[in-house]
Length: 370
Image (cartoon, rainbow, N blue to C red; front, side, top):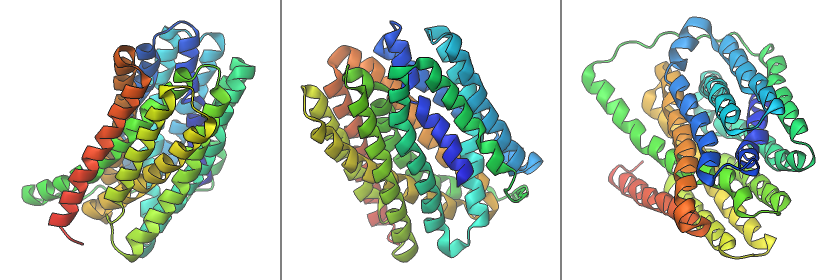
């Protein structure tokens, strides 16, 4: 949990800051969103290979490499946060994030008793959400005071995860046994719904976290607080969904959670349509965070159940690819959309994706009860 908090703390510090730095330097909204999109692209490409790396090297070396690659390159931005260096640094840091996300989630599944898997992933989510609750607004505050400081702190927080990795148990998963083609296809189909669900929710978050500070110039501190509220609400949503999964059944929370994501995203669209008070942004953040946290947890546990214990690392990779591909695609797509139709319409468009996915999940759950 400490390692996860450090890793996601470094990510959260710079997630809204790098696009804002590019925008302040004269880059367009599309280019600013592209920094997040490129980060997530290299994250996803890296995640494809992490299960093999875990079998070969074990969790600790993979996690250590992830902390290093996520943190150290941020120091380059001290010299320049222009478009080219910002994109290059984002690409390298994405590799580190890809290593961390898959290896960290798989380790939780390896260590947790099956009956407590929902709450174990929820507890890990709380550590991550608490970290982001502090670092998302802190990054924007530090940037307004000293851009150099935020990039240095971002690097140090990520690298500090190395101290926690030393105390982790030396877990190395075995290579999964071969399955026949019909079992493999059935398992893959079972992963589609949870991975698409987390991608739909993450698309909204990617756009909001990258573009809200740009949409509300001069209100960076208030936007930082809103992002912190999202993270705080996420921890409630994640653990609540974990408890529901363990007691009532996996997947029960997913459709309602996506409806909350839609509601929060829609309220953000209303909030940026004109100069609304901070209370509107906070209310939107609460709704969005509750739904986003519950979506993350329930979809993650669904992937672990579908894959089975011998393929936890593959399930983690699939889920994280959905999560990060959605985040990157949302940032990139919204960066393009808002340049044409404005921020309010762009945020509403992202929210509608979550609404459509909620309908798909509801139909899937109805057809496959329990």
